[in-house]
Amino acid sequence: MAYLSKKKLKAMGFKAVGENVKVSDKASIYNPESIVLGDYSRIDDFSVLSGKVSIGKYCHVTTMCLVAGGAPGITLSDFCTLAYGVKIFAQSDDYSGSTMVNSLVPKKFKDEYLAEVILERQVIVGAGSIIFPGVTIGEGCSVGAMTLVNKGTDPWGIYVGNPARRIKNRKQDLLELEAEFLKELKNDSI
Image (tube, rainbow, N blue to C red; front, side, top):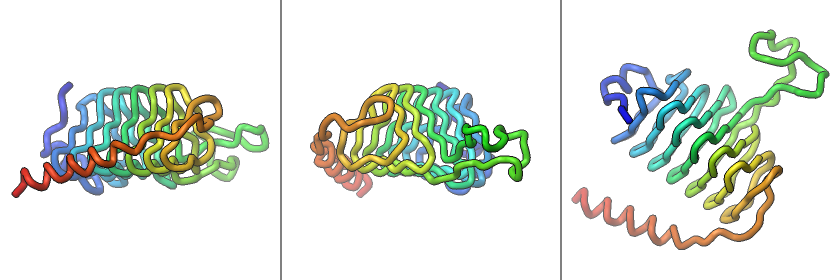
């Protein structure tokens, strides 16, 4: 995978770019002036980021993901991972037939649902999953492949299905590993 150089990332006009950020030269970035990329984050081939998006430290957006922040925005907090083909939407048309739909129709003829999406720290979202507007995925959650998340989750759960349902608690052992990892980084920088 080829990544954009630091010089090219700067030239794109991102709102902010952290240290050692990797963005594939095959990723599509729209509205970079509204996008924040945290330290050591990575965006892989054929992923699309658009609108207001904030990506924390050590986040990985794998191949073929869509992060459509629109005006409300999408936040991936530190240590979040989106597996292949995850789609996250911060806005949606009204599908009821009460209004017109699609981006080619003026807003006065539509009734879009606009709501921020937040993935709290240490969230992993499995391949092919979809997250709807207004959802907050609680800290440490694991969302299984092909899951439709249409409402918020409680922290440290494993969620699967359509719609998403909690099937059990997720272990928190990774927090000790995170602390050890961050300690080693700090010691290496001294």
